[in-house]
Each structure stands twice: as structure tokens, then as C-alpha cells.
Amino acid sequence: MNIDHHPSEELLLDYATGALDEGWSIALATHLALCPACRQKVGEMEAIGAAFMESVVPSSVTQTLTHAVLSELSEDDVETGVLVSENVDSASFVFPEPLRGYIGGDLDRVPWQRLGLGAYQSVIPTGDKETVSRLLRIPAGKPVPTHSHGGLELTLVLCGAFSDETGHYGRGDFQEADETLEHQPHAIAGEDCICLAVTDAPLRFSSLAARMVQPFIGI
Image (cartoon, rainbow, N blue to C red; front, side, top):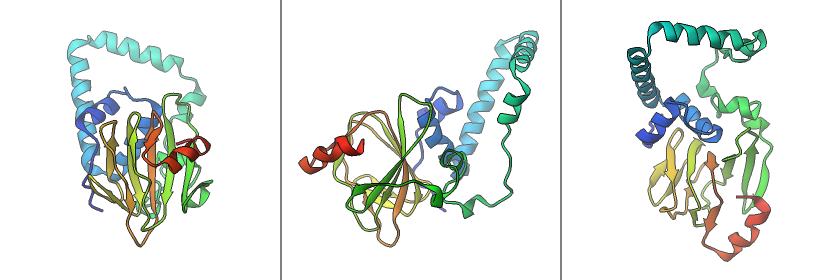
């Protein structure tokens, strides 16, 4: 798997420092599960941050804070935070963790909602009030209606591929789209394109027909 499109350095840094809302974090964490290069970058950022903290915070204060945090964690909290390895090659799944945990399984567990023209969506429940996370399934060889964006949209390809005015996107590729981008993603023939898309504002469709149905599909 060759990944050509990656999150920006700013977005990776925000993820490494815990500054992102849950929806954005899901997109970043799922990309990191597929992209060794970005995992390495985030690891380096976290290491630099840890080294900086050690250089400016006295060790006695660090130890005191650590003990205070641990004392606040109940036994149930600790167990909940443990990530259990399934000892299964992640390549055998369409959805890597942590996305698979949000879905409750892999592709066969997705409750799809019809959008029209053969496309489907499935909104992912989160506790995030700032963003909406959804899976999109675009039929092979078919386009998405031309649109721009009312805010930020992060898109991660999980299966199949699409192309638009900015390039070709396959499994693991990551796109950041803001108000300046108007595009028409087109699923590549041969396989449906399944993406994780996270937005903080509705899309702005160019066609009247798409705008008329938009309130009913919630995109």
C-alpha cells in the first residue's frame, strides 16, 4: 500500500498534543494505523514534547502529578483504557482500529443509509458536538455532486479509490478540504470507494437538486 497524501504538519502536531476534537482525532488515528511514516512523525513530536516538559518541570513536581492522576483512576478506568491486541493482521480488515471499535466491527457491521444515486452514508456516534463523523460509500465509477465546504472536511480512503481536482486517493490517503476547495470526487471504476469523512459544517453543493435533498440527508 502506497500512501501519497498525508495530514499537514499542523494537524499532526495538534493530534500529538491532544488539541483535536474527537471527530478529527478519529480520522487522524485511523490514518496513523495505516501510515508508518506519519506514526513516526507523531512519535517524534510526542518525544520532543516529553523532553521539553522534563526540561522545564522539576522531577519532584512531575512525580507528584503522576501519583495524583493515578490515584484518581479507579480499577474500572484502568481496565477500560487497555488496548487488547487481536493478534490479527490489520490488512485483513477494511477498518483498522480505532475506527473498528466505533463501528462495532468491520464492513459487514455498517448500518448504511441510502443517499441516492447508489451512494450510502453511515453516521458514526461520538461524544463530539463540534464535528460529524460518517462513512461514505460511493459506487464504483460514479461521481459525487460538485461541492465546496462550509468549514473543514477531513477524508480518509478505506477501500477503493477516488480522484478529484487535487489528485488520486487510494487506501490510506488523507485529504484536507476547506472553504477554498470546490471539487467533484469521482470513485474509480472496479470497486466502491468507502471513506471516513469528518466535517464541522455542511457541504455547499453547486447543483439545485443536491441542495434540495441536503436537509433530508444531513450532509
